[in-house]
Amino acid sequence: MKIMNILTSIGRKHLNGHKGLTAEKKVVRYDPDYVYISATDNKGVELQDILPVGSKVKCQTVLGKRADFGIPVLSSVSGEIVEIKKVFNKSLLRPANYFVIKNDKKYETEKSEPVTKDLTKEELAKFLQDHGYTGMGGAAFPTFIKYKTDAKIDHILINDVECEPYLTTDYAATFEEMENVIYAAEKLANTMGVKDVVIAIKKTKAKAIEHINNCLKDHPLIRLVCVKDVYPAGYERTLIKMIFHKEYKALPSEVGIIVNNFQTMAWIGSTLRTGVRPTSRIYTFSGEALKEPQNVLAPSGTLINEIIDNVCGLKATKYTILSGGPMMGRPLRQSDIPLAEADSGVTVLPLAQLEVGKAVPCLRCGICVDHCPMYLQPVLMFQALKRNDYNAANKLGILSCVECGLCSAVCPSHIELTAKFSASKPIVKIKTIKK
Ligand code: SF4
Ligand code: SF4
Image (cartoon, rainbow, N blue to C red):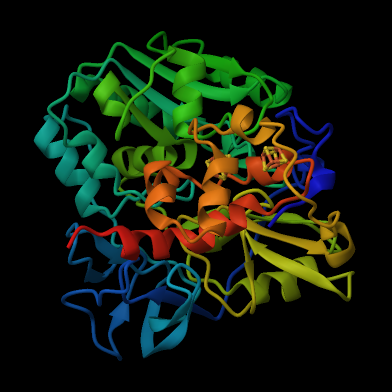
């Protein structure tokens, strides 16, 4: 997916974020009659020890456990499991089993005890695992693994940059969640022996910066760092390079850093501080095809089409729905799809806005190479794929491509580089597996 007109100038990384559509609006609450929670992990493997149909549940009731990491999958509402049925899963790109839970709208919760004592590293990792935290910035990486490390950690980095155009969920949460974020940051830093916690935000978000600075007055361990308004500043690797001037191979802990999304940290803080592990989050529903773009607080498992129909409304007749924003988001072929905890939002754009120039041959200008945050050579990878030379594409590092969309967005020849990489990565994996 490439949307050229979100760029303010080709060849530079500053994007028009279109954040004004939702940023300063009050968050609205949406209570669905039913939620749909995945009964598989993100590889499609069925959960273990699943609750049967007919079970009464509360918010935070364990519905089943992921076989890979032993992480529980939690109910986001109180009510009853009325069915387990196939629903389209946008990560797996196919129908998969989902718990269908009738929401009694009481939001009773399996409240646990607040954590006031200092935690050991082992206790902290277990706490994070038992409460089913995964990253809420999109990647859904299990949070406990970041803290179950023998590496010496010097910094905890709280990512509040949110560089994806249109999305303002972290921005909205900034005004609601600082108490929880500070509580979690200080507790986690204490456990990990960390003396420096950084909240990173774009320097253009003046109102949020003022709010964070006011909240941090009596918390000297935590500092605010304002970064340039460029894409993809919020990408973990780019952000660490910008702030700490460090690079790593696989995980930031290699260079003494743990990174958490702002809202992940807020949820950890809420659970530690009050015993309530949140199960509803703010989703941004934005885009010029919507009558009323909004930040919507809804339980995970709410269907996308319900929020579009009942909260935002459509004003365009021809439009595309993207899961996420226009740079890293994926177009959806249907909208009766449940929102997951890791989803930040949905962007609905008029088709006319998506029109781009016809692709012309590569100019060999190298602009795509200059902009790749993974230091890849998109032009060479694209040429290798055109020759069906999957070994060459693999050697060029295509499997490290994070599909940020930047190479496509800056390409003056309108070549759909990212779409090609996204479609080809599974083939490269299969073709280059060592037998
Ligand atoms: S989509 Fe992949 S190749 Fe293109 S700029 Fe992003 S990481 Fe680099
Ligand atoms: S693919 Fe596009 S950006 Fe990259 S070298 Fe060719 S014309 Fe330039």
